[in-house]
Image 1 (cartoon, helix red, strand yellow):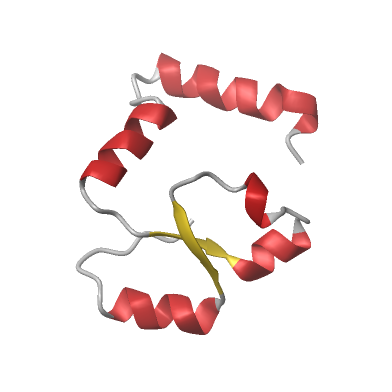
Image 2 (cartoon, rainbow, N blue to C red):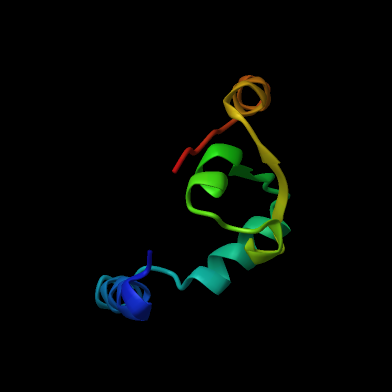
Length: 80
């Protein structure tokens, strides 16, 4: 799904051109702030992504109902 690495390369290039903080730095900052990172179960299954392939910061793989429950108790929610 990443077009042989081309998609990732292009995304990194666009981020750098627009002075967006690099992903490793954003991940570090999120961890320092205690951000809870959840992965979407359905997307993971459809894209055939193994749990082991997710970044270390992912605390759980959840469905929509669990996400909505967690989001309802959060100060801020971001869904991508």
